[in-house]
Amino acid sequence: MSLLFPSYTLISSFIIRLAIMAEIGTIDRFSSSPKKLMSYAGLVPSTYASGEKTRHGHITKQGSRWLRWTMIEVAQLQLLCKRKPGFGWYYRKINQRKCSSVAAVATARKLLAVIWRMLKDNRPFQAVPPQREVQVAHLPPIVAHPRWKGALSNCETWCFPQLCVCANGTDR
Image (cartoon, one colour):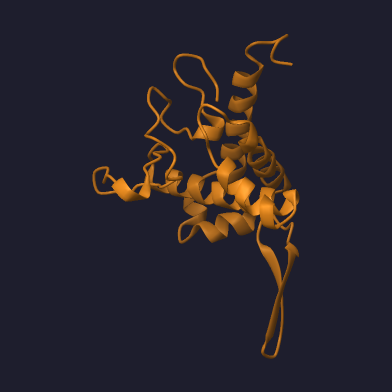
């Protein structure tokens, strides 16, 4: 499809970002932890507890189905990111032990945690390897994967690798 419409990937990433922002609304609704945002998207496991036994089941699917669908689609797109590796490594790691749908949900939860932190601190995604963390002003860095070699450059104010549309018009 991108051969026929070269700007298709730019348009689709813009629409994905708009959908995520429209579904989340203001981040102040999820002020205390990213788990509240994950729960709002319905990407948390259901819990069955009786006495001393606790069992976790499938995802709850309560909350915004559009945010859940969008985040799972973005998580599955992580495998296609070549130049800017997002969380494809995390998806593959989970997929070795579990099925692909479990890996997609786990990656979507991780992406929501990153989105929550970015919106809460009002700053762009910054992939800094754990061994050489750099403090940005007074904010702790958002850490991606040790193989990621640096921060994004020439990007919009709030972008992250899986949805990045850079200033030079490239995507992924």
